[in-house]
Image 1 (tube, one colour):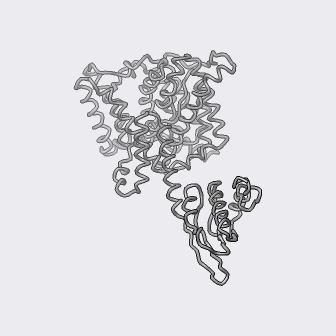
Image 2: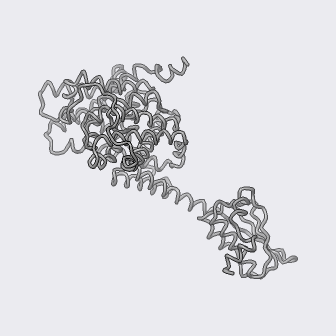
Image 3: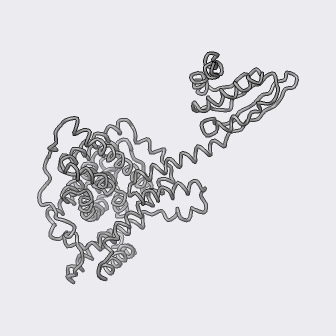
Length: 495
């Protein structure tokens, strides 16, 4: 118990607290911006970020990962808020949490094993591009002061760690935010600040039950949105957990993460917040700023609320240019630059999967669509590749006029046509033996191919014997095959 508490909370106290402060500062403008995207008051996004971060720190499956209100989730809420209002969004948030908890108990987190590395790489690269593109409005039609401040911020972020001793003590993103805020206030620069993003809340969140009718009609309204939010939320959270695991060389409990995200969203909905999920950008900021344990996530959530309520007069003075510099750093750090070099070395199919994932995510701004496209392409390429690893050889015993075919490999929908083409049905032999001791039949398409093979040989006057089926293959052949069932053959042949 004590060792677990120390490992999960107290093993990196200074680094976690400082990283949590940096994350909290970066969360404020993003939470406000995501609220505006969803069409709700900025307070909704800020309350959501506070409650989700605090709750997930205790119940999440990945220490050091930051969860809060996100842009990917906000995009899915626009129509619901526009057509039905905030109360229905809160109800949808609660249902989203319930669906995610159910996914955790159904162990759907394990489905991440079907997401290939090339899809994850494409997802990460697309997210890096989207993070950078999200900063462009802050760099468009602005004065030269903004460009100077942004460049100075990037200089601080990348050069400050090079300073002896002090460069390792303080996170450079935090130094960037504090320094540029001080310069902007001292010079009284007329540039866009956090205060220009929207009004900050001035009270603690309170318990709220959505004011919606508890009937089937309400369920039908919010269910499609809740399913979409649950899927995108879990997908982004699982992806983020994978990336954080790579950065920290640790593992996580994906099914616990599903449950944790669900509990956090229920808490957010009951406190007047919108649904959220893990944030790749903020999680990377946390890791790169020294955060490692659950304390960093808790600090981010608590400090976010403290800053909003107590330090609001200072927070509204933070120039957006400072936060833009931090997010550009995140974008550069998120992008897998090695994947560009690997384009020459990796197989063409791997490169296509990665590039298509990037294109779809960037074009649709929907992470789920891009990952789905990548997974489908990867599955098709894999099936095509495995389908080629099948060989059929044969030998003729002239004394008994018997042709023996030996099948090696996997027989399924992709290789069934090749399987059929491997037999010579025009050869006049008395007996045919099909040896399947080194083959495996996976689906009914493969069983159908075996049926056609046997029936064609019989139609040519040969006696056919199928031998060597392993137990799993024999089960599916016995259940769905017809070549050894006379009544089924008659129906198949139209008699």
